Every structure is written in structure tokens, then in C-alpha cells.
Length: 434
Image (cartoon, rainbow, N blue to C red; front, side, top):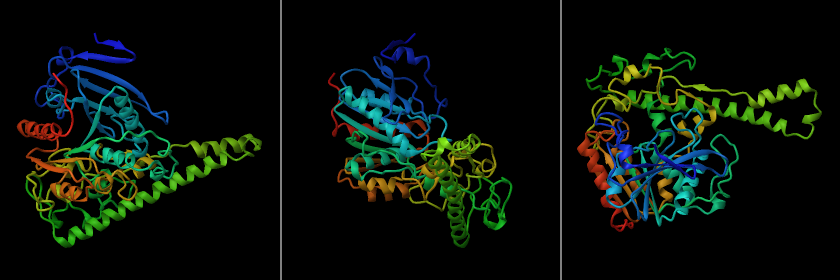
């Protein structure tokens, strides 16, 4: 059994081997870590009271720690860790407060979790901290770093929903470098591209305007694996309708949040305790009630089936991040942002509300920057990645490629991506002396 030390679980490499993933099991899992690796679970408490934890991989003597995180996903078994450990770097994954459930994920609050984890790494004596944003972790880490490098008084003072936050008073360690692997622009832009604008009734998942339906053969759709072809006129109309639907959801979400805060402010009034009990109860219920948004049909990016879109540098096949038949998945129970609080929509999935957008944030990040482009990715396109690097404030910036899909398949290309990462890190940051 692992031994508990100061609230942290410790594992040896031999103990973790029994949990190792075999090829094809766990798309981002490693199979094993190098002999002598110690895996430690570190509970963290953020300055705002949020609870999360970090998973630290070491072999001894590491001076640089390489960090992964994601708004909701678990990257504690990321396939890059064995490569990093062999090269003399420590590996770290921070599991934020909304692990495996983003129903109420606000990116502004996740910054408190990341800050708590990086402070712990600083306290443990690591000389250099590197952030690696993979997939949705790119938006999160670029948001964190862009705020960390600012003077405290210049940092954000509220969430996307308008709730005050104290980033000015938050100790935000600045990372020494940042890398990106298979990153999309950010959840908000991602959603605006894949939300189905043909929905005519937000309460009816089958409602549909056929003139705005990308899965209508009359508009150019062909059943996968056939490739669809859409006209420029249809795509222009489609994109405008996507933006309009997203903005309508924004308006509903803002209205709900503003109404809730209005009742909360009423509770804070000095005369509240003098009101009749029935009135106090009524106000309290309005201030406390939980309301959720159900966002139907979010697997509708034309680029999933029309390979002429976002084609520059792309080697992808027909399909989405979730599967090869987005036309079916668009009507399934699951999907991105299917069931979500208004404040989480505004902070995470709204293109008009979110601050976790790489192209905007990378312009504030001067630290050395690496972009590893996965050319076979179904939703993170090389065109986006190149534009992000053009916006980067770094003078030391590097672009590398591998012919992998979003999850790093096939394995040789995944390994190539990890080698790119190690080759970028090694001349820039100190390694363990062994």
C-alpha cells in the first residue's frame, strides 16, 4: 500500500506499474514511468477556499517542474511524463476544483487553484516552472500566465458573470516558460464554431431550421466518411447564425445572474432582519435558487465534415473530437456544455464572455513559448495555432509539428510530440544532475 506522508500519498514506480494503461486504454495515459519515480498527491487549498490537488512526479534532484492542467479533465497520467522524467524534469498535474465535471466551471476561479499549486511547487524548491497547455489546458494556462505577469492592480476584478474576485490580492507565481500541445483557441471560440444554429427552440432538441442545418443534404452534407462540401454563401449565413445563437444564450445567462445578484444584495440590506419572516424566506429563496442552462446540439462545426475548411497544414479525417459521426453525436445525450450554470457558460463556453482565449492572452506573455501543432487534429487547427504564435509577445518562440490526432495517436507521432517538448526544454531550463 502507498504510504501517507503529511497528507500526501506516495507511490513508487513499481506500484504504479500495476495501474499502467496498455495501448488503446486511456487515450492520454502513459504505460509506465521510469524506475525510481515517486508519485505524490498534494492537497491544495486556494486563497478563496477552493479545494483541489496536484500530482507530482519526481526521481530526485529535479530543478525544473513541467506542469499540466485542464479546466475539468484529468491529465495526471499524461503521456509526456515518462519523457520528462527521463530527461531530468519533474512532472506535475493540477486537478482543479471541477475535475471531471464542468457544470459550474468558472475560469477566473480556477486561477486560484493554479496559483495554489504553483506556490506549493515554489515552496518545494523548484527553480523553474513551465506550463504546458494541452487541449483546453491551453486556454486555462494562457489565461493564468497573462494575469500573473500583470501588475496586481491591472488584473481582472470580476468574473465573466460580474461577480467580484480579488486577483489583485492573489499571490500568482509567474511561470518561466509556456508550451502548447494540440490547443484550440479556447472553449468560447471552440463552442461558437460547433454550436448548431439551426436550433429554433432551446427547449426542444429536435427543433430545426432546415436552411441552417449543416446536416441537411440540401446544404451540402454527405454522410461520413464521405466528405461534405458547403458553399461560401451557406457558411457565411451559418456562422452569423452561430454567433446570434451564442449571444442569445449569453443574454439569458446574464439576466439570470443579474437577477440572482439583485436578490443577494437585498439580503445584505440593514433592514433585512426586520422584514416579516415570510418576506425574508421569499428573498432568500430568490437569492439562492439554482438555475441551469441546457445547451442542445453542440457538435455542428462544418469543418468536422468539410475538409476544405481550416485546411492549411491539416491532415485530419472527417469527424470531431468525440467521434467519426458528428451528425449523430449532435443529437446525443452527451456533448460539450450540455448542462451548465449561467455563470459557467459565460466564463467558459461563451465566445463573448470568456477570458480564457489563447490568441488574446498570449499577446501578454513574454516568456519562451513553444507551440506543438497536431496536424491530424479534428478541432484544433494549424491555422489557429499559427495565428496564436503570430500574436505571441515572446521573442523566443518555437513551432513544431507532429502528424497526430487530438489525443496523440498514432503512438510514434505522440512520442515525436514529447521529444519536441523535451528538446525545447533542455537547452533553456536546468535539469537534474544524476
